[in-house]
Image (cartoon, rainbow, N blue to C red; front, side):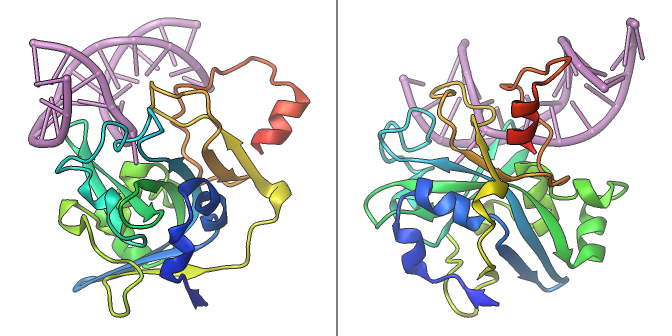
Length: 213
DNA sequence: CCATAGATGCACT
DNA sequence: GTGCATCTATGGC
């Protein structure tokens, strides 16, 4: 188990995102800790990316995105949900990786208590579900996930083989919906099912079924 | 199985 | 005032 160094996040989100697949995110609180193995992420570039919160420049909400890499950017959306990003690129520029889904690999009891009645597979299946399972809210905005002793910790795992990494359009983004900057692990049951931009088909082609896993 | 509506607070224009 | 980087319940098949 190797901690992820801050300099890893100094690259832009497009390079960081696929490498995060399979890595671990742990959040520690007084009630215990929950660890999630990442199975689905999305890259958001900065002021050049119409889908990014940073597209129109720095605001109070997105200020953390312009800060040092390795911190978490947490935002509130749809009146009830929190989503969590890892800030990438050097300080002064904004890019980030949205953590969309994962598998709870430790702290299962605590994660279940945070989402009662939910099947284990669905505990962190989706960006807002993932933050609930981990116990993340707006108070965590700006927390340094690369600092020793932080309540948030990241760990490298062996890279997922390239042929097991799928990519496709981002979810829920109306601007720049065409770029394939969402990455997930093929065949993972914990990948989020909510994908309004992907039309269902009666008979998916073999090629498509294969590329999606 | 699939599709749709409603909830709900806040950042931003 | 508008529109979300969403999820769940509910209804139809």
